[in-house]
View 1 (spheres, one colour):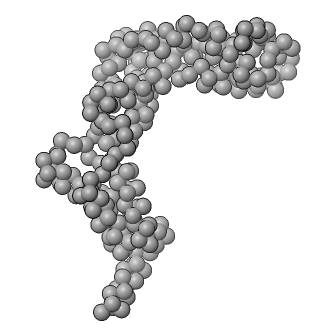
View 2 (view 1 turned 30 degrees about the horizontal axis):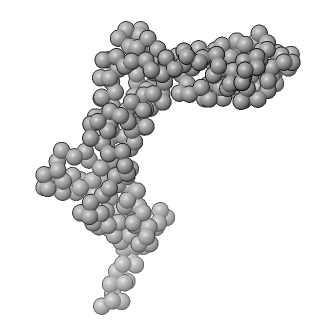
View 3 (view 1 turned 60 degrees about the horizontal axis):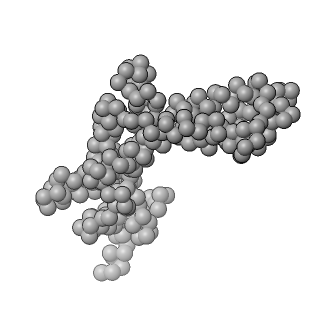
Length: 249
């Protein structure tokens, strides 16, 4: 039934609809809409390969597929999204929260996706023992990750760098523009080391280290504003710097 109007699926189409509903309730799709998209793709493929499989009364639109699946799972889908988290699931989540705070992941969503994949593997190996009756969808895991990360002290806003950190970024950007490093990697490694030492001296050693990728972006952006480019030859840059010095003297 879509928008109150019943849809007469053929037997082969109905099997795809039923499979999409089972996958949705099992947590394999984060939303009803994503389940409908996947199902509609399969329906379209079935109809191309087997035109006789389509019921003449069945709708050909994604919207109708979505409304039909939504109406069929109404109530059951709400329950699946609100399934309580077990103690074992929370322990797995907290491990990834700690990894997020240590800088292993750039965002809570990235940590949530990794946690979702890990939980799915653990659930299979444990044969559902100690896990919720209905698997949590990836979107639910990511949302829970955000909540736990905020509770652990992670800011929901974009990271703000201190003036001292910015001065370190600029120092390494100038070094890149001067040709002191063959590429960004060694500059980022040394910059993160200097940042960690600076935090330790100021009594902030408990702060998580700045992740590699954000530091790389900070140095890259500043170095490019100074004339550095990916295709720049370090030796040529060093020669240019010497020429500038000679001219200045």
